[in-house]
Length: 145
Image (cartoon, rainbow, N blue to C red; front, side, top):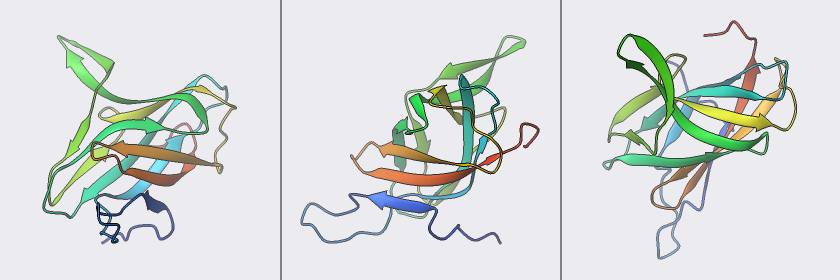
């Protein structure tokens, strides 16, 4: 069984209203970003792990590497696959949701610079309860899946 990458995930503001520490609502593993030779756009992928007793809902994304980060999915529209923005990604309690090529993913748009393989990108996922999850993702070569 693959282990979660130590140090690759940090939950920001993970406290209860009383200020006591709570366990992270979401863990992330196998995160990566597709290499891009130009600073237009690229995609980020990962597996979202919810071991809690409640659903976790991602409602936003951001990254210092891009002016815009959006939640997206590839979906069949008649006989054509189309990419479209989604408002949220729900991770059911005690489940995993994979963000992968050809499915759900994060789009990084208007990059600050080209992203070569071997680099790393910080991604921040915003949850519907106001918490944020910060992920450090390696950049993989163009042909990666």
